[in-house]
Image 1 (spheres, rainbow, N blue to C red):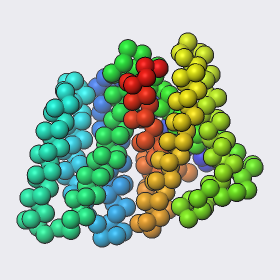
Image 2: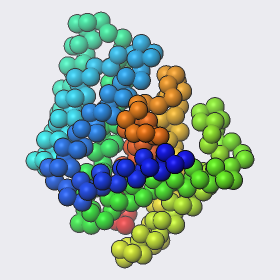
Image 3: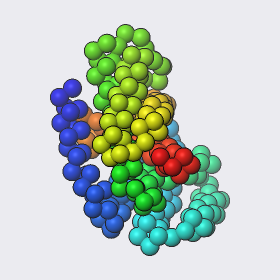
Image 4: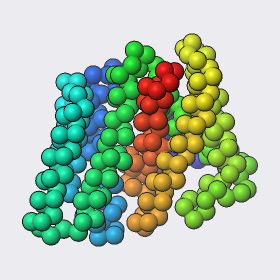
Length: 259
């Protein structure tokens, strides 16, 4: 338990990059994406699935350029299509398994584009510098409250075949913790309490789905953690598994409902 707390506190300095924004944030994002996609692809090597790393690396570099120069979505579609054509050519040339390409592009969609919604949330809205923190409030409060509630009161297993330690009590605690923290955040920054109440509660469910989905992948490939970069938490993906789904959820919640 103490290791988890220390590791969580060690991530606090990363928030400075979000506060600063701009080029430092884009560089940090590229580094995190590079590590995360490697962790994801390496996990599937356990199933003899060898993703085409260079395709993801090119796309990560494009994401950096997109953010730095504020490129439009039409460039994103063009890059994805070009990379897809390259992957097909690669498949035909070296006779890789079709699953190699499938996992390559799934990793790009699941990890790279999803995490980039953090930067999109920060840059796309007038109050982006305030809204962006709801992504981390939802994700980390859900994880923290679920962990301690489950540790103290957990008796009924949630989905034991996917994650044997998670409990229904912990899940409820995570939802309550996320909702309460989002409401407090809304009151502090004079945001809509009702909207943050909804986003905090639904977002917590999304976060838990993200956590369970990541766990199901690890169980499928037969690994305990994606990596060992962060003591007590594993790799980047182990710490940000819920953020991956929460980031696009928060972005579209703002875009569609103008929190």
